[in-house]
View 1: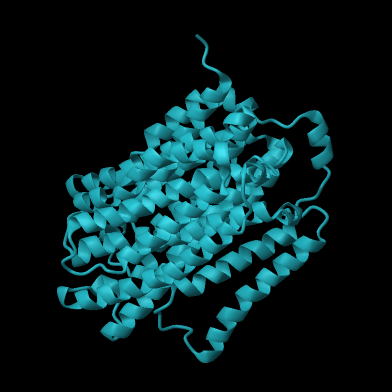
View 2: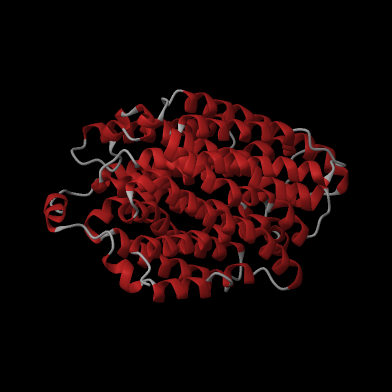
Length: 479
């Protein structure tokens, strides 16, 4: 019996999602080890994550544009190859600097897959099963996130950190070979679409303003405790420049005949809220994913493999909840399910603010599991609500915008959490960095962690309020 094409697409997209999310979760667990191996600061080490997220965030919108001429499937297929090459290069990195550069290559391929994955599901899946299909993608996401910490912990303890990048290479090669025939021709625009969009010039000015705005926002946050450029004048410049480029970007996009960011799509309240809430949800998630491995390894003294088991609590819940959430969206819409998910994320952060040096492992697991439960309840309904309301020719850019929102959340979450924590920790320890941590600094660490999670609570509350106002009922999901 021949497998339907939409199921073949689901397998290929799911496998790519599994590979990229497994890599991401493995690297988060490995950050304390990488800091020790390369004797690098928190600001430098977190760039192993930041450069990955930054590259994806600034490039996703570009892939949405090029999908109209190249084709969604071909872009996804090429992304698999570039990601695999980047993974191989990461295994050869001799220093923290070269590792960061090779992560940029890896992230370029990942961004191509992330941008086109949901669009390929939209293009091939029956409309009445879109939420179910995205829920199944949520299972692949959870499997990658779930297996990543465990595999990373085992490799870090019993093998070598380089294997956390090498392990994705055979998966990537298999996908590239197996998916070539199907993906090269999938989601290819028809002649009418090509004739309509090809003559339109690419929005180079908008792209430049966007890239500069994102980079200038992240750089000051990632160097919170460095001694250079700390005068009052430089502080003003670091605040004014990002704001200036964001305003230039918005101003230009409103004037541009074919903007990089399709502003008209945001005229729908439901569409705009879906994008903004996606960003906030991942800001909150990465507050936890960045800092919890440091708490577990440094304050609690758990070895890497046990840190991996703890962190698996987040995606384990996604595995069970994501398909149910997608099914519920198909029946009742996104407002109730997505808002409930964000509320559970907020409650999880409240629980994590009560961490102490002797907090029981069961409490830690429960708080992390609740975070995963909330993310699973939110993600599939939120994505389906945005994708189901746009025509096919807009599905590529919508998928890119969703992925951009999520990765911008990861990027800003990582940078902001690192900024708040490093600032608090330096203030309590006389300017020390976390790489110089000793047991006598445990109370300072816990206080800094608590302050950081309290900031996350405020952001989660904003997301809940926004989600409540997105509209209600199934009809809203299909606007």
